[in-house]
Length: 222
Ligand SMILES: NC(=O)c1ccc[n+]([C@@H]2O[C@H](COP(=O)([O-])OP(=O)(O)OC[C@H]3O[C@@H](n4cnc5c(N)ncnc54)[C@H](OP(=O)(O)O)[C@@H]3O)[C@@H](O)[C@H]2O)c1
Image (cartoon, rainbow, N blue to C red):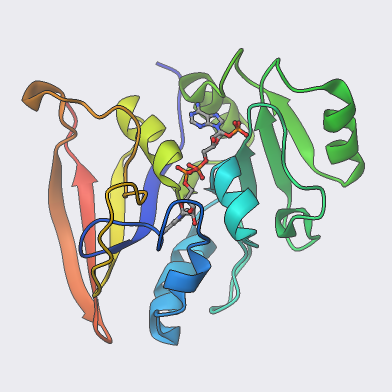
């Protein structure tokens, strides 16, 4: 298999496994519970990776900057999978603070690709219907992305879990419960539905920052 980046999924998750207050809500509101020290932990990881990825839906709902702000360090390359390149042209990910790559598919209209390129971002076409992650990862590695942080949301997390492209998972446990059947959880998608297929992990580290438990897990390779 070609070389791929070392992938760390990092997520802020409530005690009941949720990523945001309700479907369609920006997780920024929930994140406002986090203290400065917890943000430093998160941004320290950003400062140590070459690339950072969030799904297109997270860009549309949260409009994150994905830069390093709470610690010293260089911001990683922002990588956004977006199957039709339907990303707002005024999104914060197009700021000049760091390079940005929009990964799209053959379904993306040429004129939208052109507009994104005019903003100074790179566009990669990898996939037919949806972004093809097993194909994308070796291409990112060739571009110098040796360590990739994936910050959600739940659909993108599932793609990495399903394709067994994740090496580590780090969770900031938010000490709250939200409830709600349809609220996005840490990993979405179809689910494995079988004990044999589960992604298995071993705990590497756990500690508390302020009142937030942090757990760091390594994926057991099959
Ligand atoms: N708590 C946290 O740590 C955290 C972190 C991030 C996000 N969130 C929250 O999570 C929610 C968003 O999660 P989400 O699951 O709806 O969206 P998401 O994972 O952020 O993005 C999914 C989108 O990515 C695009 N995509 C491209 N290729 C894909 C592929 N192969 N498979 C799946 N998607 C692909 C699709 O958009 P196109 O159809 O446009 O291609 C799809 O709708 C928001 O509420 C956000 O606030 C929370």
